[in-house]
Image 1 (cartoon, rainbow, N blue to C red):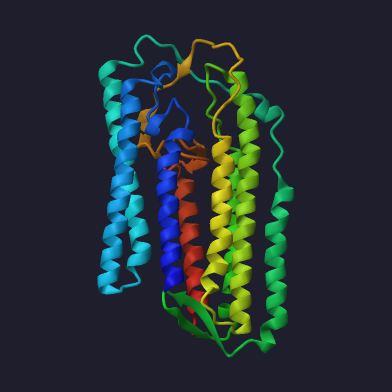
Image 2: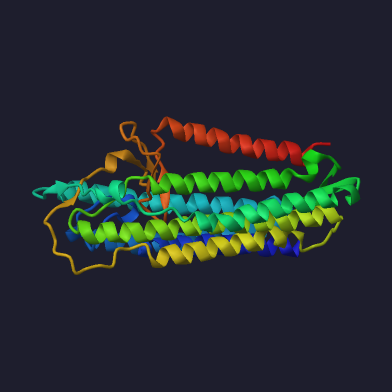
Length: 359
């Protein structure tokens, strides 16, 4: 139980830190997902909403954790531990949406785009000289998955007849009879995760860059660097998830029941996520200020961003686009292929659950 409390507290702390830090590492011309001209990036409204947003995050975060701790102390229900993390995520988006709404209203009332020359910038070299995909960084994930499968085949004859397939807050709470499906369920998860993150990375490489028309050359140069860094980060994350699945599989195959079993899964993944966030955050802004300003500004395309976070544009063929708030990329929810991708993820999760809990 102590491990479950520590993990939930760790995730809650990570959510709060992310919520407080992301406004500082996001592009200054899209504060809280609102496209604004560069001359209004430091507008008093933006500065005030940033301060208010952080106060709201801190106050709501402390309140949610306190209420969650009291309820858990009274009821002892383990489900409350991960639940308060989900409530924190909801509160985070609520704080974000309020800031987004206020800045959009100020932009409309103040006519921030009136008299400005709007434009787009295109890097034609992406077609003639595209950046190379870092396939070598996929090697660790593939090697770990293959090693897990081979080790499972070797150990299968000596595996216990009953396998521990799930740990709850109080220890093992789900058993399954030994079978190919139950024993190798996490291998299928490894294959699915590796394929999914590789597909997302490839899609990001083919995505349309959001170049700054005021500084197109420096923006294109930064985009190439960030693209390569993001791809390596995602493939490294896939390897760490696969490593966590390997550790969990070994515990299951050897019949090892221990209080730190959940740490074998959570610690590698959490460490990889933290490293990925730090690396991407440190490189999330364009830093070349030597290029002469062209006098153009980004197009005001807020109509395609629902709530400042979700990109919905049926006329855009791109599957993946740069995220406005935060790090990395997001899906175009107006593209039919997004629904297919979501269906594939749901099918993967369903298959893993079915194999894992069979018997």
